[in-house]
Length: 72
Image 1 (spheres, rainbow, N blue to C red):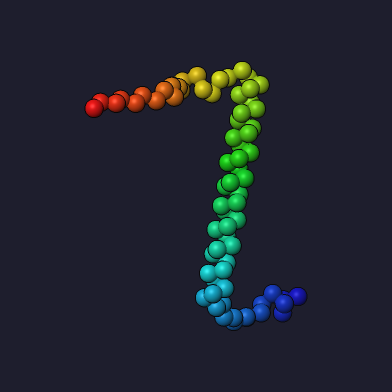
Image 2: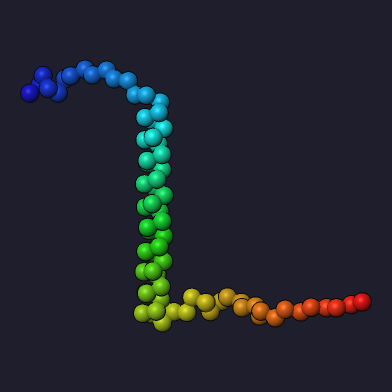
């Protein structure tokens, strides 16, 4: 058993493999962030609806009036 645990292994990792590994890790982090962002927003919305909290109560709404001034 001790022979299996004390193996000295030397290996070479090609730079392209490290680049691929970094891209894979970054992709996983971005995917997890997107997943959490989407589902936490949905959970917050459901909780606000259940508690009767209006998330738009402090927001100002602008009108969509378009004014065209013709001065000739």
